[in-house]
Image 1 (cartoon, rainbow, N blue to C red):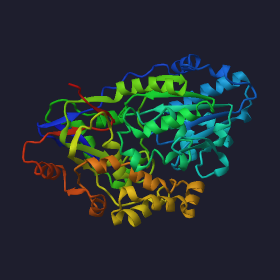
Image 2 (image 1 turned 135 degrees about the vertical axis):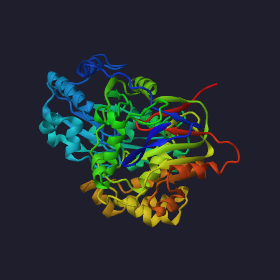
Image 3 (image 1 turned 90 degrees about the horizontal axis):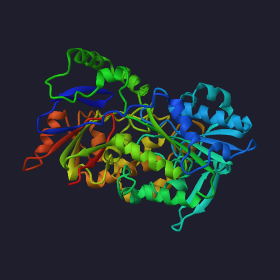
Image 4 (image 1 turned 90 degrees about the vertical axis):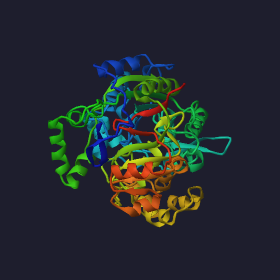
Length: 512
C-alpha cells in the first residue's frame, strides 16, 4: 500500500508491504462553530469555581499567563488564546480593573523567550498593541521575580514567578494539545525555576512511566504533588482550550492527507504536486517548515478549577488522540519531520532528533508500549549535524563536548551544574532568544525511556553518520535497506507497523 512518509523537511510516498500494519490518527472531531459562544459559556459556567467576576475587585492585580510557542506544534493558523484573551479583558473591563493592573506572562519555563511576532500571534494584534509594555516572558534566572511557595517532604523547592504568585488572580490560558500539557504542569513548569523543574525532569524520574500517560508517569505524579502543596496559596482560574487534530486543514490537506485505502498509487494530481515540491531546494523546504501553521480548531473549553477542568480536557483529548493498537510489534516505523517543540522557526539539530525519537515518539502511548521490549525503531530523517547557535548554543556544545564522549546519562549532574552556572549561556538566555543552558542536558534526559527500552534505532536516509555514532543509531541508505536490516535480526517472521504521522496520535494497546 502506498502511503505518505515524512523525511525531515521533505515527504514522499512509499509502497509498504502487505505485512506492515498501518495506523493513522483518528478522524478529526468537528470543531465548535461559534468559538466566542463556547468560550463565553465556559467562563460563565466554570467548573468547581466562582466566576472571574466574583473573585476580584476593580483594584485587583491580574496576571494573565499563557503557554509559549511550543504549544501546539506547529503553531495554529488562528490561535484560540487570542480569542480567549479578548473575553478575559472584556470581563476585567466590565469589573473596572485598572488597565495598568493587568499583566501578561508567557510561561516559558526553561525555554527561549518568545519573540514579539510570536507573542502577537498568540495574544492577537489588538491585545499585543494595547498591552505591549505589560507583556513579559517568564525568566527563570530573574531571582528577584521568583518566590518559594513551599518545599515538599522530599526537599523539592516549589519556586515560581513572583509577579504571578502575588497577583490577586492568575488567569491561565492553556491549549490542551497532548496529555503532556495542561493542569499543574502549566504552572509548575511554565512559571517555574530550575529548582522546581529538575526534580521531575531528571533521568531517574523520566524513566518511570510514559509522560503521555499521567496515570503511570512519575513526572506527572511529582508535578501534581507540587501543585497540591501550593493550590491554597494561589488564586487561580484556568481556561483549558482543547483543539482537534486537523493538522492538514487547507492546502496541506489536499497535498498530504493520508490515503487510508488499499489503492496502488495516489491520484496523478497529487503525485504531480509532490514532484514539484520535492524539486524545490532544501532551503525552500526548510523555509516552508519554519513558517508552517497547522489547521487545528477548537473543540471545547473547560474553565475554573485547575484540576477539575483538566480532567475534562483529558477525557476529550483522549477521545481525539487515543488509537487502539492490536498488538506489540517487533519493528515500528516513523517518518520523522523536522518538527519538535524546541525548534519552532529554527533548525533541527541532532540533540532534538534524539529527544523527538527516543523521547516524544517512543513515549507517544498510554499503557504498554506498542514496541516490544528491545524492539527495532526505524525512522526516516536526514539527521543533519547543524545547529542554530542563536537558539541552541548550549545544545551545540553539549553535543560535541559531552555526548561525543558517550557519557552515562545517570552521571551528568556535575555537567548539568556547570551548564546551569555558565554566564555566557545565561546571558544569551536572558537577553537574547536562547534556550536556558541546562535545557540541553534536560533534552537528553527526555529520551531516557527510549535509550533504556529500544533495542536499536535504524535511521533510513541519514546524511551524517557522526550523528548516528554519537547516539548509537544504525545507518540505512533508505527504507528498503532499513526494513531488510531490521528483519534480518529476527529468525522468525516479525511483526511490523507504520505509524503515519502527522497528525500525532497516542497508541493504546487493545485490552483483551
